[in-house]
Amino acid sequence: MAEQEVSASLKSQNADIPTYVIFINNSTQDARAWWLNYSGNPVSYGDIRRGTTLKMNTFLGHPWLFRSSENGAKLLANMQEVYLPVPTEYEDGHPIYMTVMITAPVYSLQECCSMLIRKLVRKEDYDKLHIPRSLINDLAKAPNLQKEIKNLNAAFRETN
Image (cartoon, rainbow, N blue to C red; front, top):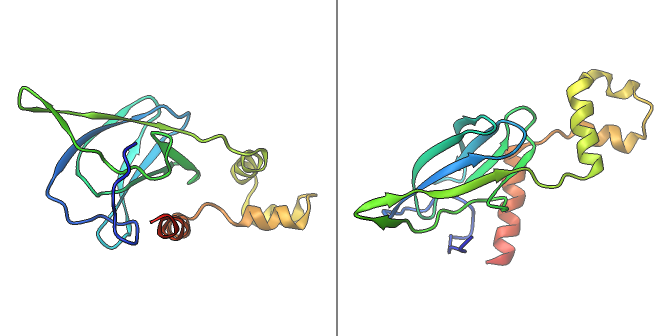
């Protein structure tokens, strides 16, 4: 993925250069597409069912994130947490849609177990599980997109 200059935070930049992408969901779960608006707030562009695609007309400087529709788990776009569109190529005056593959990262064993427990056990029953308190506390911290964006912003500022 080509790196692009974005201001000090992850948010859409005023850009008048259109780019065209086709998001292909190659993960084993439905993916929710999130565009980060001009304030850095996520805006849902709906779900992409596993094995299907979403064509999107977007702009340079407009970041995209993807999460599992079911449990909010992180998904990757072209092996990156944040997808920043690249300039479009044209053929005979028509835009060529750039392919963006949505995949799941390699989740840790703890992440896999936590996702399964959250799916099978009601939140109010976590305390009844015979597991260490630290794991019960981790279960209570379900994926939170706003918090993840805040962390991504901090990491982004460190690298720019």
